[in-house]
Image (cartoon, rainbow, N blue to C red):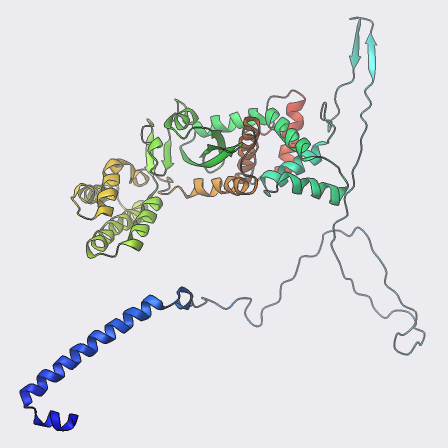
Length: 445
């Protein structure tokens, strides 16, 4: 019937029918594809696998690598047999020997030391004289320096809570100590070492550039903020109930003449110092907006601003090979392009917000081009604030202001020692014992 019907149609009518059928098929295929996308589970989306750049391990024919042999042997155990394990026949002298070295940890034990103080009577000044403190003695402390410094490292370097430190001391060395005693001992250590933290702050204030950042903190469940002021060799932390600009101003002091590198948080805007705003934060914000806005207008301006920032970094890399006149001419052109972009009018809501930020911080985005060795990002500060975030997530901050002050002091010294690649345990022990005996400084930051 359908064939007869089509045959009865004229050529023009058949063309119209075919065109109408093609249009219906196209609409149906479009609906099917939309339904597939809508109902497809997220885990079913396959992402192309990255090809490994090179095969892991050494190339064929290269010598294998094993653990380096120890430079000394503490004990030698001879392994001998007198009869064959297969036929029970007696064996004579060994024909050769080979060594198998093995490294192990000796289980620790508590060492109890009694410091016996001798007192003397001075006939000249009519007074009783007591012998001074010994080298490794901590006045008025029942726990020795090695245990205290190890507790400090386990807490602030390895991020263990106090209950885990207590269990570790008890199981590994047989040392019984309560969580409260550990917390109070570390707070006392921080009081004696606070002079070193002040020396760190003084040194950072006199440096050529400094990074600043902040993150959330808790003091007995109350919202607080942990601030940091760091450079390439030193780190200073401060915990405060406020996130206002006054905290940043007090940390920098009145004599800071360097360049402050930070994100776009408003508390840093009013500081009377030269600034470099983090371009990585700007790029991250642009990427987040691109994830939710794929409009033609947004992508057009996104590519334009990204090209300006790429040209700025390219000029930084090539600056040392250019004549000063050529360098500053190109710098002026980049600044003009950035200003024109920031001052333009946008209908896109994302670019309305971002262009306002660019206009406010226009003079602080390209500071890194004028001064060598000044980074364009605040990544250094974010890396150094990360250990504090780990501590916060595991212990939920501090229970008291005294505990918060101890955390800021000990973390400042710990991170500064790590940045300088110094022996952390030995330096802490040396400084703590020195300050307990009345010396002014030991770490010399």
